[in-house]
Image (cartoon, rainbow, N blue to C red; front, side, top):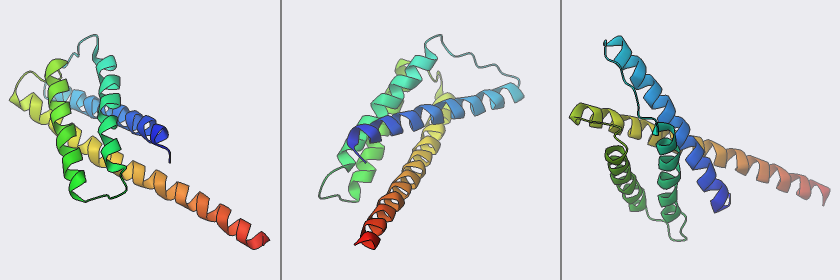
Length: 137
């Protein structure tokens, strides 16, 4: 999978995951009797966060991949989401921060599993094409 396609796919998954997480948080707030009304620029901030948070994935596209790069990747994204959340007022108190970080962890895990599924699907298609070429020879 080329890098541009990977970045676009991850940005899409991250944005959708954030919207899903915030939707769940809104339901929880509503059931608790509180209301959550995001700022007018919330949707744009989520899309921007998806794009920004997909960029650090490029550090995982190296020849000599080391396992510690996953921890570095997670750390960079954790800091980025914390800063973006503060900048765009996704949270206003410590409880809100923990909710945003919980959503972040869920989106992070979701994105890893979704990308793994896409890579496996691409591998199957490539292997199938190679098998058909071998059969012709």
